[in-house]
Amino acid sequence: MTAGASDRLRVYLDGSWYDLTDLKHPGGDEVLRLARGHDASMLFEEAGHKASTRKRMEKYRVKDKDLPPPTDVPFTEVTRNESVLKWECPLIKNWFVDPRDFHLSGFLFEMFMVTALKLVAFYMDASHLVCAVLFLLGQLWTPRVISFGHMSTHRNMFKHWAQAFLCRDVGNIIYGMPLGVYRLHHVVMHHTDNNAEGRDLSSTMAYRRDSPLHFLHYWGRFVGFVYIELPLYAIRKGWYRDASKAFFGHLSQFVMAYVAYGYRPTAALWFFGLQYLVMMTILMCGNWAEHIFIDPRRPFDSEGHTYIALDTPANGFTLNEGFHLLHHLHPKLHYANYPQTMALYAANIKGTLEFRGLDFFEIALFCFTGQYEKLAKHSNLDAKELQRRAVTQFDQFGKVIKAA
Ligand SMILES: [Zn+2]
Image 1 (cartoon, protein in one colour):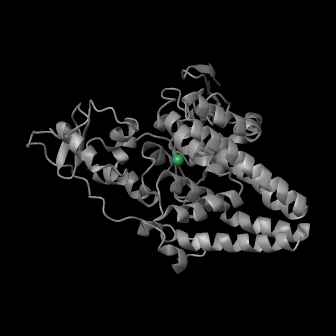
Image 2 (spheres, rainbow, N blue to C red; image 1 turned 135 degrees about the vertical axis):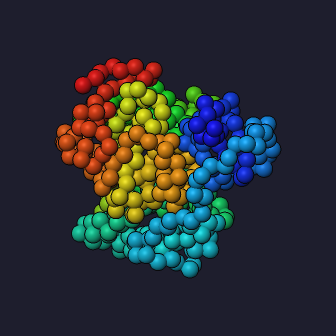
Protein backbone atom coordinates (compact mmCIF):
# COMPACT_ATOMS: atom_id res chain seq x y z
CA MET A 1 0.00 0.00 0.00
CA THR A 2 1.23 3.54 -0.72
CA ALA A 3 1.39 6.16 2.02
CA GLY A 4 -1.00 8.46 0.13
CA ALA A 5 -3.76 5.82 -0.17
CA SER A 6 -3.87 5.15 3.59
CA ASP A 7 -6.57 6.48 5.93
CA ARG A 8 -3.76 8.06 7.92
CA LEU A 9 -2.59 11.58 7.09
CA ARG A 10 1.01 11.05 6.10
CA VAL A 11 3.47 13.47 4.58
CA TYR A 12 7.00 12.91 3.36
CA LEU A 13 9.74 15.14 4.79
CA ASP A 14 13.42 14.93 3.86
CA GLY A 15 13.52 11.19 3.26
CA SER A 16 10.97 9.94 5.85
CA TRP A 17 7.24 9.58 6.15
CA TYR A 18 5.50 11.31 9.07
CA ASP A 19 2.06 10.32 10.33
CA LEU A 20 0.40 13.63 11.24
CA THR A 21 -3.17 12.35 11.68
CA ASP A 22 -3.18 13.34 15.35
CA LEU A 23 -1.15 16.53 15.03
CA LYS A 24 -3.00 19.76 15.78
CA HIS A 25 -1.18 22.15 13.48
CA PRO A 26 -1.09 25.68 14.98
CA GLY A 27 -1.77 27.23 11.58
CA GLY A 28 -4.77 24.94 10.97
CA ASP A 29 -4.92 21.45 9.50
CA GLU A 30 -5.65 22.58 5.96
CA VAL A 31 -2.00 22.83 5.02
CA LEU A 32 -1.44 19.22 6.15
CA ARG A 33 -4.30 18.07 3.96
CA LEU A 34 -2.72 19.97 1.04
CA ALA A 35 0.47 17.93 1.32
CA ARG A 36 -1.18 14.61 2.20
CA GLY A 37 0.63 11.67 0.61
CA HIS A 38 3.26 13.93 -0.94
CA ASP A 39 6.67 15.41 -0.34
CA ALA A 40 6.07 18.37 2.01
CA SER A 41 9.72 19.41 2.40
CA MET A 42 9.31 22.66 0.46
CA LEU A 43 6.15 23.68 2.35
CA PHE A 44 7.89 22.91 5.66
CA GLU A 45 10.96 24.92 4.67
CA GLU A 46 8.95 27.92 3.42
CA ALA A 47 6.98 28.13 6.67
CA GLY A 48 10.25 29.00 8.45
CA HIS A 49 9.93 26.25 11.10
CA LYS A 50 12.57 26.25 13.84
CA ALA A 51 15.00 23.38 14.46
CA SER A 52 13.08 22.58 17.65
CA THR A 53 9.95 21.88 15.57
CA ARG A 54 11.87 19.23 13.66
CA LYS A 55 12.88 17.62 16.97
CA ARG A 56 9.28 17.63 18.24
CA MET A 57 8.19 16.00 14.98
CA GLU A 58 10.39 12.97 15.66
CA LYS A 59 7.58 11.13 17.49
CA TYR A 60 5.46 11.22 14.33
CA ARG A 61 8.11 9.58 12.12
CA VAL A 62 6.79 6.37 10.56
CA LYS A 63 9.00 3.40 11.40
CA ASP A 64 7.63 1.21 8.58
CA LYS A 65 10.53 0.98 6.16
CA ASP A 66 8.38 -0.71 3.48
CA LEU A 67 6.50 2.48 2.62
CA PRO A 68 7.85 3.66 -0.73
CA PRO A 69 8.71 7.36 -1.12
CA PRO A 70 6.22 9.51 -3.07
CA THR A 71 6.57 9.57 -6.83
CA ASP A 72 6.47 13.40 -6.91
CA VAL A 73 8.77 15.30 -9.13
CA PRO A 74 10.85 17.08 -6.47
CA PHE A 75 10.29 20.78 -6.11
CA THR A 76 13.38 22.56 -7.37
CA GLU A 77 12.91 25.61 -9.58
CA VAL A 78 10.83 28.70 -8.89
CA THR A 79 9.13 31.08 -11.29
CA ARG A 80 9.70 34.81 -11.04
CA ASN A 81 7.66 37.94 -11.50
CA GLU A 82 9.10 41.06 -13.03
CA SER A 83 8.76 44.74 -12.10
CA VAL A 84 6.52 47.02 -14.19
CA LEU A 85 9.48 48.06 -16.37
CA LYS A 86 11.17 44.65 -15.95
CA TRP A 87 14.42 45.67 -14.31
CA GLU A 88 16.19 45.42 -10.97
CA CYS A 89 17.44 48.46 -9.09
CA PRO A 90 21.03 47.84 -7.91
CA LEU A 91 20.56 50.40 -5.11
CA ILE A 92 17.77 48.50 -3.37
CA LYS A 93 18.34 44.94 -4.62
CA ASN A 94 20.79 44.08 -1.87
CA TRP A 95 18.27 44.97 0.82
CA PHE A 96 16.28 41.81 0.06
CA VAL A 97 17.00 38.53 1.81
CA ASP A 98 15.65 36.26 -0.92
CA PRO A 99 16.86 36.49 -4.56
CA ARG A 100 13.29 35.70 -5.64
CA ASP A 101 12.35 39.20 -4.44
CA PHE A 102 15.15 41.12 -6.20
CA HIS A 103 12.83 42.14 -9.05
CA LEU A 104 10.79 44.16 -6.52
CA SER A 105 13.67 46.64 -6.26
CA GLY A 106 12.78 48.01 -9.72
CA PHE A 107 9.15 48.41 -8.73
CA LEU A 108 10.08 50.22 -5.50
CA PHE A 109 12.41 52.62 -7.29
CA GLU A 110 9.70 53.47 -9.83
CA MET A 111 7.12 53.97 -7.09
CA PHE A 112 9.35 56.34 -5.13
CA MET A 113 10.18 58.30 -8.31
CA VAL A 114 6.46 58.93 -8.86
CA THR A 115 6.21 59.89 -5.20
CA ALA A 116 9.07 62.38 -5.66
CA LEU A 117 7.12 63.99 -8.52
CA LYS A 118 4.07 64.22 -6.26
CA LEU A 119 6.19 65.92 -3.60
CA VAL A 120 7.39 68.50 -6.11
CA ALA A 121 3.78 69.12 -7.20
CA PHE A 122 2.80 69.48 -3.56
CA TYR A 123 5.63 71.93 -2.85
CA MET A 124 4.85 74.01 -5.93
CA ASP A 125 1.11 74.05 -5.18
CA ALA A 126 0.32 72.49 -8.57
CA SER A 127 -3.06 72.81 -10.28
CA HIS A 128 -5.86 70.21 -10.19
CA LEU A 129 -4.88 69.06 -13.68
CA VAL A 130 -1.23 68.37 -12.77
CA CYS A 131 -2.23 66.67 -9.52
CA ALA A 132 -4.84 64.55 -11.31
CA VAL A 133 -2.29 63.40 -13.92
CA LEU A 134 0.23 62.44 -11.22
CA PHE A 135 -2.49 60.78 -9.17
CA LEU A 136 -3.56 58.66 -12.17
CA LEU A 137 0.05 57.84 -13.04
CA GLY A 138 0.58 56.64 -9.47
CA GLN A 139 -2.29 54.16 -9.84
CA LEU A 140 -0.11 52.11 -12.25
CA TRP A 141 1.75 50.94 -9.15
CA THR A 142 -1.22 50.56 -6.79
CA PRO A 143 -1.93 46.85 -7.41
CA ARG A 144 1.69 45.98 -6.76
CA VAL A 145 1.93 48.30 -3.74
CA ILE A 146 -0.94 46.29 -2.26
CA SER A 147 0.51 42.91 -3.27
CA PHE A 148 3.97 43.83 -2.06
CA GLY A 149 2.56 45.16 1.24
CA HIS A 150 0.55 41.94 1.53
CA MET A 151 3.37 39.48 0.85
CA SER A 152 6.04 41.40 2.78
CA THR A 153 3.79 41.58 5.84
CA HIS A 154 3.29 37.80 5.78
CA ARG A 155 7.01 37.06 5.53
CA ASN A 156 9.88 39.43 6.13
CA MET A 157 11.66 40.26 2.89
CA PHE A 158 14.35 42.64 4.14
CA LYS A 159 17.70 42.35 5.86
CA HIS A 160 17.07 45.31 8.18
CA TRP A 161 13.84 46.56 9.77
CA ALA A 162 14.55 50.13 8.59
CA GLN A 163 14.57 48.92 4.97
CA ALA A 164 11.21 47.25 5.51
CA PHE A 165 9.91 50.41 7.15
CA LEU A 166 10.98 52.63 4.26
CA CYS A 167 9.90 50.34 1.41
CA ARG A 168 6.73 48.86 2.86
CA ASP A 169 5.41 51.16 5.59
CA VAL A 170 6.31 54.55 4.12
CA GLY A 171 5.24 53.29 0.68
CA ASN A 172 1.93 52.15 2.18
CA ILE A 173 1.29 55.48 3.92
CA ILE A 174 1.89 57.35 0.66
CA TYR A 175 -0.62 55.08 -1.06
CA GLY A 176 -3.25 55.63 1.63
CA MET A 177 -2.68 52.69 3.97
CA PRO A 178 -2.33 53.84 7.60
CA LEU A 179 0.68 52.61 9.56
CA GLY A 180 0.28 49.56 11.82
CA VAL A 181 -3.13 48.53 10.51
CA TYR A 182 -2.58 45.99 7.73
CA ARG A 183 -0.81 43.35 9.83
CA LEU A 184 -3.58 43.25 12.42
CA HIS A 185 -6.45 43.51 9.97
CA HIS A 186 -5.18 41.07 7.38
CA VAL A 187 -2.39 38.79 8.61
CA VAL A 188 -3.72 38.34 12.13
CA MET A 189 -7.50 38.75 11.85
CA HIS A 190 -8.39 37.72 8.31
CA HIS A 191 -6.06 34.73 8.13
CA THR A 192 -6.70 33.41 11.64
CA ASP A 193 -10.46 33.89 11.56
CA ASN A 194 -10.47 32.86 7.89
CA ASN A 195 -13.48 34.87 6.64
CA ALA A 196 -15.70 33.56 9.48
CA GLU A 197 -18.75 35.71 10.20
CA GLY A 198 -18.72 37.22 13.70
CA ARG A 199 -14.94 36.88 14.05
CA ASP A 200 -13.32 38.26 10.90
CA LEU A 201 -14.47 41.89 10.48
CA SER A 202 -13.86 41.56 6.74
CA SER A 203 -16.02 38.41 6.43
CA THR A 204 -18.24 38.17 3.34
CA MET A 205 -20.36 35.25 4.64
CA ALA A 206 -23.44 37.18 5.77
CA TYR A 207 -23.73 39.19 2.55
CA ARG A 208 -25.44 38.45 -0.73
CA ARG A 209 -22.21 38.64 -2.63
CA ASP A 210 -23.58 39.30 -6.12
CA SER A 211 -25.31 42.46 -4.94
CA PRO A 212 -23.61 45.85 -5.51
CA LEU A 213 -25.80 47.24 -2.71
CA HIS A 214 -24.50 44.64 -0.27
CA PHE A 215 -20.98 45.48 -1.38
CA LEU A 216 -21.70 49.16 -0.71
CA HIS A 217 -22.71 48.24 2.84
CA TYR A 218 -19.53 46.16 3.25
CA TRP A 219 -17.39 48.99 1.90
CA GLY A 220 -19.17 51.68 3.95
CA ARG A 221 -18.78 49.73 7.16
CA PHE A 222 -15.06 49.37 6.49
CA VAL A 223 -14.36 52.97 5.44
CA GLY A 224 -16.59 54.46 8.12
CA PHE A 225 -15.79 52.31 11.12
CA VAL A 226 -12.56 50.33 10.72
CA TYR A 227 -10.62 52.80 12.87
CA ILE A 228 -13.01 52.03 15.76
CA GLU A 229 -13.89 48.39 15.05
CA LEU A 230 -10.31 47.18 14.57
CA PRO A 231 -8.96 48.55 17.89
CA LEU A 232 -12.06 47.11 19.63
CA TYR A 233 -11.38 43.72 18.00
CA ALA A 234 -7.82 43.81 19.43
CA ILE A 235 -9.05 44.94 22.87
CA ARG A 236 -11.51 42.00 23.00
CA LYS A 237 -8.55 39.67 22.36
CA GLY A 238 -6.49 41.43 25.04
CA TRP A 239 -3.98 42.76 22.50
CA TYR A 240 -3.72 46.31 23.83
CA ARG A 241 -0.55 47.19 21.93
CA ASP A 242 -2.13 46.18 18.63
CA ALA A 243 -5.26 48.13 19.55
CA SER A 244 -3.33 51.34 20.17
CA LYS A 245 -1.22 50.81 17.03
CA ALA A 246 -4.36 50.47 14.91
CA PHE A 247 -5.99 53.50 16.53
CA PHE A 248 -2.99 55.83 16.34
CA GLY A 249 -2.08 54.53 12.87
CA HIS A 250 -5.42 55.76 11.54
CA LEU A 251 -5.27 58.94 13.59
CA SER A 252 -1.81 59.86 12.27
CA GLN A 253 -2.98 59.28 8.67
CA PHE A 254 -5.94 61.63 9.20
CA VAL A 255 -3.84 64.27 11.02
CA MET A 256 -1.27 64.15 8.22
CA ALA A 257 -4.00 64.63 5.61
CA TYR A 258 -5.53 67.48 7.63
CA VAL A 259 -2.22 69.32 8.03
CA ALA A 260 -1.40 68.80 4.34
CA TYR A 261 -4.84 70.16 3.41
CA GLY A 262 -4.24 73.31 5.42
CA TYR A 263 -0.95 73.86 3.62
CA ARG A 264 -1.71 72.74 0.03
CA PRO A 265 -5.42 71.89 -0.34
CA THR A 266 -5.36 70.90 -4.05
CA ALA A 267 -2.51 68.40 -3.79
CA ALA A 268 -3.77 67.10 -0.43
CA LEU A 269 -7.19 66.40 -1.91
CA TRP A 270 -5.69 64.21 -4.65
CA PHE A 271 -2.70 62.63 -2.91
CA PHE A 272 -4.21 62.10 0.55
CA GLY A 273 -8.01 62.21 0.36
CA LEU A 274 -8.68 60.50 -2.95
CA GLN A 275 -5.70 58.16 -2.64
CA TYR A 276 -7.00 56.98 0.76
CA LEU A 277 -10.44 56.25 -0.70
CA VAL A 278 -8.92 54.43 -3.70
CA MET A 279 -6.77 52.28 -1.41
CA MET A 280 -9.68 51.41 0.91
CA THR A 281 -11.91 50.60 -2.06
CA ILE A 282 -9.39 48.35 -3.84
CA LEU A 283 -8.61 46.53 -0.59
CA MET A 284 -12.26 45.83 0.17
CA CYS A 285 -13.10 45.05 -3.44
CA GLY A 286 -10.20 42.58 -3.51
CA ASN A 287 -11.24 40.85 -0.32
CA TRP A 288 -14.88 40.69 -1.44
CA ALA A 289 -13.93 39.23 -4.82
CA GLU A 290 -11.54 36.69 -3.29
CA HIS A 291 -14.36 35.45 -1.03
CA ILE A 292 -17.34 35.97 -3.33
CA PHE A 293 -18.23 32.27 -3.79
CA ILE A 294 -18.90 30.26 -0.64
CA ASP A 295 -19.63 26.56 -0.74
CA PRO A 296 -22.52 25.84 1.68
CA ARG A 297 -21.03 22.40 2.40
CA ARG A 298 -17.84 23.86 3.86
CA PRO A 299 -18.14 27.63 4.45
CA PHE A 300 -15.32 27.71 7.01
CA ASP A 301 -12.75 25.80 4.93
CA SER A 302 -10.41 27.81 2.72
CA GLU A 303 -11.37 25.45 -0.12
CA GLY A 304 -14.98 26.41 0.54
CA HIS A 305 -14.66 30.20 0.67
CA THR A 306 -11.97 31.06 -1.84
CA TYR A 307 -10.65 29.85 -5.20
CA ILE A 308 -7.87 30.02 -7.76
CA ALA A 309 -7.74 32.40 -10.73
CA LEU A 310 -5.15 31.31 -13.30
CA ASP A 311 -3.91 32.40 -16.72
CA THR A 312 -4.59 36.09 -16.20
CA PRO A 313 -2.22 39.05 -16.67
CA ALA A 314 -3.19 40.22 -13.16
CA ASN A 315 -1.01 37.46 -11.72
CA GLY A 316 1.95 39.17 -13.39
CA PHE A 317 1.48 42.69 -12.03
CA THR A 318 0.27 41.55 -8.61
CA LEU A 319 2.41 38.88 -7.00
CA ASN A 320 0.43 35.83 -8.14
CA GLU A 321 -2.56 36.91 -6.02
CA GLY A 322 -4.78 34.71 -8.20
CA PHE A 323 -3.50 31.64 -6.34
CA HIS A 324 -5.51 32.82 -3.35
CA LEU A 325 -6.52 29.37 -2.14
CA LEU A 326 -2.86 28.35 -1.81
CA HIS A 327 -2.20 31.59 0.03
CA HIS A 328 -4.90 30.75 2.60
CA LEU A 329 -3.64 27.19 2.99
CA HIS A 330 -0.05 28.35 3.50
CA PRO A 331 0.19 32.14 4.09
CA LYS A 332 4.00 32.13 4.35
CA LEU A 333 4.56 30.33 1.06
CA HIS A 334 6.56 32.48 -1.36
CA TYR A 335 4.43 33.86 -4.22
CA ALA A 336 6.96 32.65 -6.79
CA ASN A 337 6.29 29.08 -5.67
CA TYR A 338 2.53 29.09 -6.26
CA PRO A 339 2.41 27.70 -9.82
CA GLN A 340 4.60 24.70 -9.02
CA THR A 341 2.93 24.13 -5.67
CA MET A 342 -0.39 23.92 -7.51
CA ALA A 343 1.05 21.32 -9.85
CA LEU A 344 2.68 19.30 -7.08
CA TYR A 345 -0.38 19.01 -4.83
CA ALA A 346 -3.06 19.18 -7.54
CA ALA A 347 -4.60 15.86 -6.46
CA ASN A 348 -5.35 17.18 -2.96
CA ILE A 349 -7.18 20.29 -4.13
CA LYS A 350 -9.02 18.63 -7.00
CA GLY A 351 -12.57 19.90 -7.36
CA THR A 352 -11.83 23.27 -5.77
CA LEU A 353 -13.30 26.23 -7.64
CA GLU A 354 -10.95 27.43 -10.35
CA PHE A 355 -11.14 30.17 -12.98
CA ARG A 356 -8.99 30.55 -16.08
CA GLY A 357 -8.51 33.80 -17.97
CA LEU A 358 -10.29 36.04 -15.44
CA ASP A 359 -8.93 38.09 -12.56
CA PHE A 360 -10.69 38.92 -9.27
CA PHE A 361 -12.13 42.20 -10.46
CA GLU A 362 -13.54 40.73 -13.66
CA ILE A 363 -15.03 37.87 -11.64
CA ALA A 364 -16.71 40.34 -9.23
CA LEU A 365 -17.96 42.45 -12.14
CA PHE A 366 -19.54 39.44 -13.89
CA CYS A 367 -21.06 38.41 -10.58
CA PHE A 368 -22.52 41.88 -9.91
CA THR A 369 -24.04 41.90 -13.40
CA GLY A 370 -25.44 38.36 -13.10
CA GLN A 371 -23.33 36.96 -15.96
CA TYR A 372 -22.98 33.48 -14.50
CA GLU A 373 -22.98 31.74 -17.90
CA LYS A 374 -19.95 33.79 -18.88
CA LEU A 375 -18.26 33.00 -15.55
CA ALA A 376 -19.01 29.30 -16.00
CA LYS A 377 -17.20 29.29 -19.36
CA HIS A 378 -14.02 30.21 -17.49
CA SER A 379 -14.61 27.92 -14.53
CA ASN A 380 -14.86 24.26 -13.52
CA LEU A 381 -18.38 24.76 -12.05
CA ASP A 382 -21.65 25.37 -13.89
CA ALA A 383 -23.56 28.67 -13.83
CA LYS A 384 -26.22 27.42 -11.39
CA GLU A 385 -23.67 26.29 -8.81
CA LEU A 386 -21.70 29.54 -9.15
CA GLN A 387 -24.87 31.55 -8.57
CA ARG A 388 -25.81 29.39 -5.57
CA ARG A 389 -22.39 30.04 -4.03
CA ALA A 390 -22.61 33.80 -4.68
CA VAL A 391 -26.10 34.41 -3.28
CA THR A 392 -26.26 32.07 -0.26
CA GLN A 393 -25.90 34.03 2.99
CA PHE A 394 -24.64 32.46 6.22
CA ASP A 395 -24.72 33.21 9.92
CA GLN A 396 -21.76 32.90 12.27
CA PHE A 397 -22.33 29.13 12.67
CA GLY A 398 -22.20 28.56 8.91
CA LYS A 399 -26.00 27.99 8.82
CA VAL A 400 -27.72 29.24 5.67
CA ILE A 401 -29.83 32.31 6.51
CA LYS A 402 -30.88 33.08 2.95
CA ALA A 403 -30.53 30.88 -0.11
CA ALA A 404 -31.27 31.53 -3.80
ZN1 LIG B 1 -2.80 37.17 3.14
